Image (cartoon, rainbow, N blue to C red; front, side):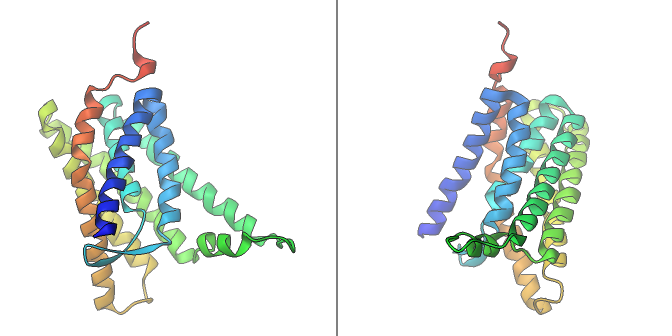
Length: 229
């Protein structure tokens, strides 16, 4: 039960920190959040945990928060700004992968104690790194497109939950399908792959539903940099 309670607290903390970034730094804070959480989610994914009876990787709540950030950008600043955030997150992830692969090639000194740990975390199989970047780029762009389409069908402020959940749940499904297919192709038998796919999406589904209240809070927030002097 500990992991479940801690996981719920971590989800709330992630979305709360996102709103704080938005309050103090406006859309720049959301851009920064997308970059930061994309990097951290891909570090956390190296750790597996047991939660709600499933074996899962960390990083799901952080990763889900990037979809909330782009939805807020889309809602308040338009599709162009949301797409800009998507490319910013992808660029941050790509830079991290390249920079850390270079870093791992350096021969550690005799007194070094960090190389082994860094190699464990950042010595990702290329298959997984590629899967992560392709899944991120495809699903985030789909999220932006679906959100914009739903806004035309459901334009009222009270219907934000439809735009938010509809776009996020569908794009997360694509993300999970792409990532698990590329990262684990040929690694696990098909029945095991199905279990990984389902458990991963279930967790993302739950986290995505939990972000809706925070989206409504973001709609009424006036960032400090947008207040009239």
